[in-house]
Image (cartoon, rainbow, N blue to C red; front, side, top):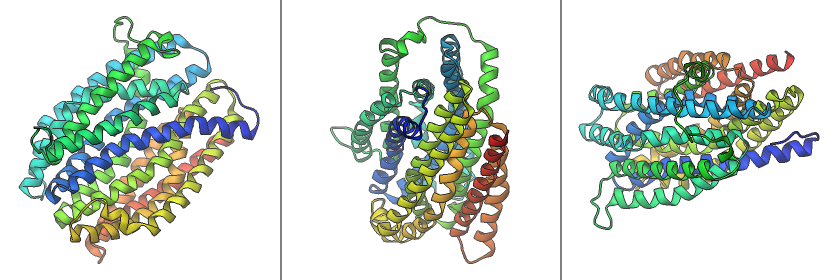
Length: 445
């Protein structure tokens, strides 16, 4: 990254960082997309089981692992201030923290998740698939947490094209492994939905190996000498990572776990409803990769400008990012309206699940515009290291507004399971409004 002066230069640099991040996020999410889609082609029970399991996993990874996201603004600001030693020290400590978090998640999955699943009103076969899928994912938990740190390090230096290439190469591998482990090929038995967990774990290990070789042997990453020698744990650095990362992680957790909570609450409406809900949510999450990519880009580039004390430049990048996200939301909504039935048919051959999925996809349409405003602003505020207020916004808008409203619609109106989605829409909209007000206040200061 470098200092820019004109609007054209800013748009060019913003696009240079955004495009690889977008392809990276798409590739990472396409792993989950193909897990769900290919499992749906195997059996509806497996699709429902993977739906439950993946929602638990996403809540755990994005919430606990989200604390590690605090590394990005720290490294970005240190890079803007040209403080190489601080970058090296922080990245190494973040790796130690990632391993600790991974072990904590393993304990949760093996000892707490079985209790949770046993007390859910879902079929026994669905419970079995969900738990076995999570156990298969456990094989890859340590590598994906470490990869998350090293990817944040590379991206914060503005070299987003590197992680783009890594994830683009890993996607075909994941699809191939899904085909082998889900349906049973080349002498390997068919594991169904559980096979998607094995395929994803193997892919995570391959990603970690590749990124480790990059930071050791390729410049400019090798010049920071990350992990070239074993250093002791530094609790002051951990404290800094926690102080910035914990509000970020909790905000991400409140946002993602609300979808997981809705999925669990929907279990009372039957397997077909869960499967359709998961299919529509999966596609909606795929569309969310656009505002999420803008958010990650703004964290990097705003952090860089703030570290160099160019606050007016940071403001201009915020405007560019939000405008781009809103324009893409319009395009995504048009695509969704025109190809709703085709999209639904990608996920299932079951007529009942197909019909429900088409209805759920209509609600995805309304998610786009709230996400297009909220996600970029969250990323920009992280670049400013303003993380506490967005955390409270996430708590209030999702859990104190969205979920109660959804429960009322689902149980006291004729909306049924769609009531929870109406609640999500209300929560997302309220969060977007509050975040916009916070950003306006930040610019005035």
